[in-house]
Image (tube, rainbow over all chains, first blue to last red; front, side, top):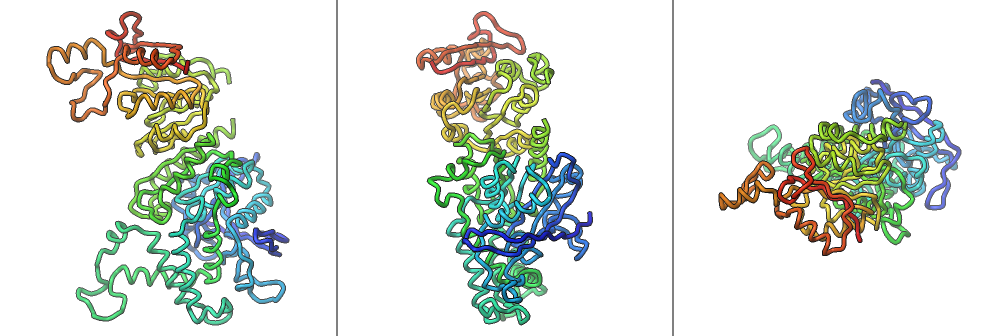
Amino acid sequence: MISETKIVHFDSLRLDSGEELAPVQVAYETWGELNAARSNAILIVHAFSGDAHAAGVSAETGQTGWWDNMIGPGKAFDTDKYFVLCTNCLGGCRGTTGPSSTDPATGAPYAMKFPVITVADMVRLQKKVIDHLGIRRLLAISGGSMGGMQVLQWAVAYPEAVACAIPIATTARHSAQQIAFNEVGRQAIMADPEWCEGNYYGKTRPARGLAVARMVGHITYMSDDSMREKFGRRLRGKEEFGFDFSAEFEVESYLRYRGSQFVDRFDANSYLYITKAMDYFDLTLGQPSLAAALRPATARFLLISFTSDWLYPSYQSLEIVRALRSLNRDVAYCELPSNYGHDAFLVDVAEQTDIVRGYLASTYREAAA
Amino acid sequence: MAAATSPPRPAFVADVLGRSDYAIISELVAPGSRVLDLGCGEGELLAWLALNKNVDARGVEISGARVQKAITRGVSVYQGDALESLLDYPDKAFDYVILSQTLQETREPLRVLREMLRVGRECIVAFPNFGHWTVRLAHLFTGRSPRTRLFPYSWYDSPNIHFLTITDFVTLAREEGWRLERSIFLAGRRRVGILPNLLAEVAVFLFRAG
């Protein structure tokens, strides 16, 4: 399955901060065919560091999509049946307008002049893309982590446009622990002298700060079990300690490798803006309760969490389930057993595939009836 | 869609679902109603009701593996404790709340039954009858915890923590002021007409708050 990135342009986007972003562009990819009734569209929403290339092999880079094990012919999001699309989020650096985009006022990259954005802003921009494609109602919207936050926001902001919401390994509001890890990442970037208050474009990038931020992130995506299994205390390429500070342990070398790899594909300022948007995310803001916040949502919900995910623990999904139940909404929930920590929704997909496939099929059947 | 909503034949349902109490329950539930099934297992009954009676079907199940199978069938089931789930729901959220074959395994059964009556307009319970004559004889003659076809477990591996009879349930209903609208007694797939507390293996009650 070959996929190509498409770009769509919009005149402007109103932001929660009160500012207006103009113009705006969105990068997106699609798989499968939209049916005549336009009733088989599924929007996939990526996590913090993802992009529009969710499935297939990229025509541009030759790389496989980040959720290729879930999207494709015969897979959970079956492209033989459904029209699946994914957009790069607002503030990103993979084709959608973000801090590395050119500010029309100056002709230079926005850098820190880019307005602070929210998860609701990301969703408002995705809605423009859906409208642009002539899709009035999505059969489903699904994503994990920050993607799951956008799924919840979609269900509340555009209830008439969502038949089925599938938020995975996510929360209705970022917790102190989640904000804390994001802040460590941001501080690592901002402490890098190459960051230069965000004005590093065309110069040396703050690669070391961004790599450290990513290393911290990776730790939070794994679990004690998965790290013990994957690395243990094994040394890399040697039997004995070298009594120095090179990357001796397997786990050190893995984190350094992941960090350096990330620098090649991600923009440090995007890291700052997107993590800030996640930290601001709180569906209950200005509402007396989570149930009150979810009241507008009318979609069927399928929530999934994972036993070893300590970054987005199951209690956060359960909180959403209980609120939906108090509203007597249609909600299914399962905590899947996995050792992979938060990464489970990306890598441990056998059971996730079964339940998503079944739930989608029954939603599609009902929608067609 | 007349075919989808016509009343199912009990024998057929029993064949499909493999359980005689499911056959009775599927008869009792009105088409197009809202149903909550507590301890719904792999969602067989709910999936059948959704497909054949156009029911808005929800379920609660404690076992994660069974929840996975139920959701794979497309049924809205969530993993959790029955009582805890009931407490979240608003009054009369469902037309029927069903508890089939798990009353004898349920902690705080009276509290669960009262919550069922708050959340549902009507309730359906099905349970194995511990008053069946084989159980009485087994206990009388062996002097041990009865092991029968209906209760095949040893005392140490049984999921059953309450051993209630039909008479026990009817007595409780009277004390609580519940209205028993339908009482159906089964031995195998046969209906039992006389001496149900002695002859019935399974009882199904449809009842509501008085």
